[in-house]
Length: 353
Image (cartoon, helix red, strand yellow):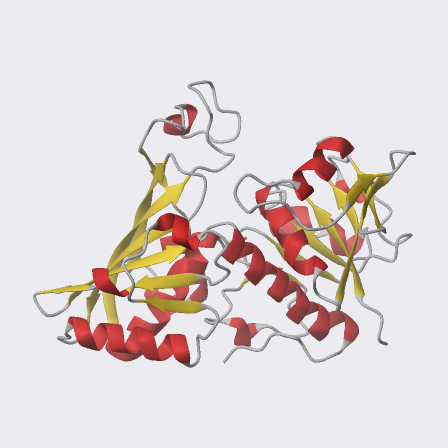
C-alpha cells in the first residue's frame, strides 16, 4: 500500500520532540498520537518553540475540545496516560511506537505494546541491555535488523557518537582497549539549582547544572559492547556534565594493535566519512567550537585538529555531536527503516553500508 505507517510517540521530552520534527518530514511515517504526562498546552507549545533548535516552521494549534493539537492542519491526538496499555492504539490504527519516555527499559515492560496494544514495531530512545531487544547504531550494526527485530533501540546519543569512531579504528588498526570521557551538556536528569533529584540516584545530579562541572556516569562505553561484542571488558568511560544546553564532545582514547601516525588515523577517519559512514560520521579540519555543531544531524564529527598519537599506539580523538538532534535524526531514520521492513514491506528511504 502507499499509505504511510501510523505512529505514536510516548514521551514528549527533548528526544520525543526532536524525533517528531524529523519524522514529520518523512512521507512514509504519519504521527497521529502523542502521549505524555504533561499538559496538552505544554506539548503544543514545546514542539513549536525551542530554545536550542529554534522555532518549528509549522502552524501548531491546540483544538477546542482539548483532544490534541494540529500541525499545519493535521490532527495529532493527545493523551496523558502513565500506563500506555490504556491507550486505544488499535482504534487509531497505530502500528509503530516511538518510545521516548526513558522509563521503559526492560523487555518485560515493553512487551505489552505487542501483547496488549497490537503494535507491530517499537523503537526505544535509550538502550535496553537485554536479550529480546536489538540496540542499533546506524552505520555500525544496522545489518542485524530483520523481520524478527520488532523491538529495537537507537542506543544512546553518546553511543551513536562513539560507535562510528570505534568502527573506523577497530577496522583499520585494531583496538586493545580504550576509555572515553564525554564532555556532555545538561539534560533533564539534572537540576537547575541545588535540590533533591527525583530522576537519578546520583547525588551529583542534585547540584545545579548551571554552574558546575559534574562528573557522572555514561552508559555509552559499556553499551558499545552491545554493538561490538568482541570489545566486552575493553572499553569504559565517564561523563562530565557541563553548563551548556547543546552540542557535546567525546574524548576517545584507544590503545591500538599496531603503531600508527596522526596522519594515518585522520586519513582513515576522513575516508570513512566520505565512504561507508557518509552522513553519519563527519570530518572537520576547521577550528570550530561547540555552538558550530548545534543542529548538526550527523552522529559524530571528528575534530581533526585535535587528533593525537602518543608513543605510537595510544590514539586520542575528539568527536563532536549535537547530542539531541543527531540522535533524534538517527532515531527517525531507524523508524523509517524498521517500518519499511516490518510493517509496509517497502524499501527503506535510508540505506547505510
